[in-house]
Image (tube, rainbow, N blue to C red; front, side):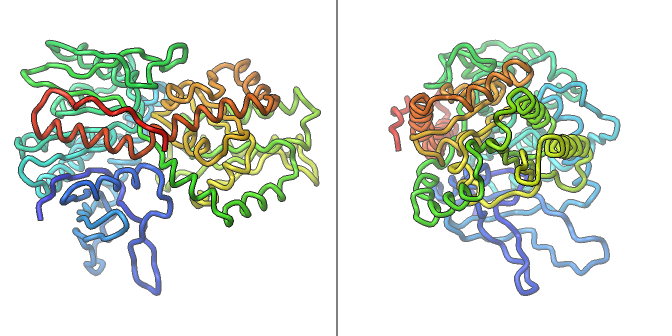
Amino acid sequence: MAAQLVIVYHRQPYEEQVENGRLVLRENRSPNGIVPALKGFIGQVDSASWIAWKKAPPAGKAPGFERRVTVRDSYGSYEVVRLPLQAEQISQFYHVTSKEALWPVLNSFPSMYSSENTHWATFREVNRLFAEAACEEAAPGAVVWVHDYNLWLVPQFVRRLRPDLKIAFFHHTPFPGPDVFNILPWREEILDNLLSCDLVGFHVPRYACNFAAVSQGLRDVAQVTWQPAAAGLGRHGSALAEPQAPTSLRVGGRTVHIDAFPIGTHAELIAQSMSREQARDHVAQIRARLPERKVIVSIGRVDYAKGTREMLLTYERLLRRRPEMHGKVKLLLTAVAAADGMRVYRRSQQAIEQLVGRINGFFGSLSWQPVVLSTTPMTFQETLAHYRAADICWITPLRDGLNLVAKEFVAAHDSRDGVLILSEFAGAAVELGEALLVNPYSISQMDDAIDRALDMPVQQQQRRMLRMQEHVQRYDIGHWTRHVLRWFDVLRAGTAEPAPEPEAQPA
């Protein structure tokens, strides 16, 4: 059956496991994150399909590749079309072009940019395969919803093949200003693809403003319309603050709608999970293993943009500056190692491991280890338990599209205590103004932030945490889903903009 909604995202919407020699598809262990958030739309439409890639079996092996599978899980019933990519295609599409050329520019690290090994024609070809699969699945007038920068070239292929379709695009990453974006030698092709969409979405107004500025610089934009930033996103004073956001631009006789609205977390589910006796026992067990007075948690992945090196250097300075904290503080650091083939992250992982070794070797003893490092991911329940057990969550990326970890920590904690240290260069900073916002490029600000977090009175912790929890509960994943669905209705109806949103209510 042709789909009303076609989600185009490179990851498959399930986990593959081998049981008794058979490959089985299991629902994602974590109900939070990008994939579960997108799967939440499946039950909201009559029919849905998902386009992803999967590594093709090696040449000469028995052909067992299923291009199409039907999935039935707690989200509903939907079709998944898997594109069989060869190893070289995967390397060029994802490991090289996406991570070595596009990722550094998106995150404003031009010194890390490299196109030396990039074969753009392969990247374009993979995007064409995604587009063709989406067009084959889509019902007349359906919405094709494309996700993230490695599928930047899908929209024009879809527009040429199926002009009846409505095309929406959502960026989960930052979007840089013209001076950085224009480093890309393929900038005009990328922009023309985005301008082929009916709707281009971002997490926060700053990224939408940057997109409008890039468009005005490279193309003859007839008109840009603006309005005040959505509720809770127009804060002043932080690095990504923007009081207004573009809502549409007119170019080439077409109107391209622009949306800036950050994804939420599943706050109610997290709160319910942490209210169970088993979860409370788990938290108590973690604290029993950690006799330190202050426990700091930081969860992320190996990536130079995540600021893990800068955080560890700050922690090292703390232990030098405040010897009274020795034996009384511990940093639990999860920096998940990159997948095989990600050459660009090897140096970052080595730097993290060396810094942790240096800190533990210099300050540690047989009875106290200042840092515990894990490079393997924890389960969702394990992660939530560590959030609740921790006194401080330290999330200071140098650049981040949003950062759901910050929202998860707030949702998993309770309003009695807890401190969130958050980089003002993370998209979530424009929402979570009660966090300790910090410029991670500033040594003095980083030092001051960890001191304030360690010394903050409980009453102040409670006041800040309560306000952040109210926001996270009010603007949760359900609110984001309803917001996007209203946009889909606009695209299908051809109207100017969504109906005014009802005021979100706390969960």
